[in-house]
Length: 185
Image (cartoon, rainbow, N blue to C red; front, side, top):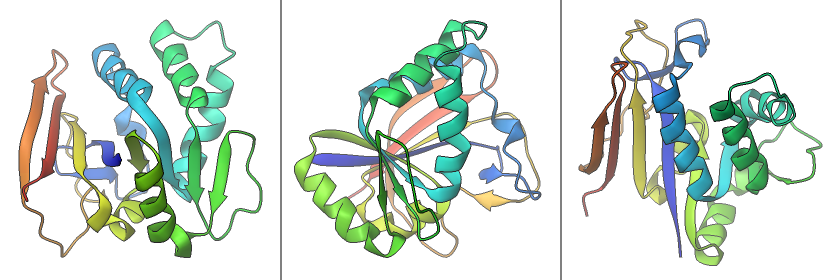
């Protein structure tokens, strides 16, 4: 049975985007990137909302063939492209090979089926999709960056209380702290 891991780079004040909608503060250092690469290699599938998918797909497709990029980035690109991707959207009409388009209204039913059919981790990206699937998420992983952005899109949905138990933590030389939690059931 599959397990869902919702993961993102976040500001110290808990945001995945700043007040202007930018994710420019989330560029990882090599050590953080290597941890993200490990996470990507362990994923059996990626589940994305439309905006996260659009932020990931084209840049990582392009990165896979660029010899001028650092190896840590090319490695992530290879892991990304080798992993089946599901994008939940009501506005997209086409996706490339390796990606399956699912209507957002079918997200809970589709992800429930995926959890039953796929062994391993289903990596979830996108705050909106995570909010709609919150009751299906098994674990939460945050790469907390040493920057406060003063508001923006929060990692956790507003107005929901979650009881969690820390399962992993790591402090990196850059000041990034990796935190991983599972639901306290």
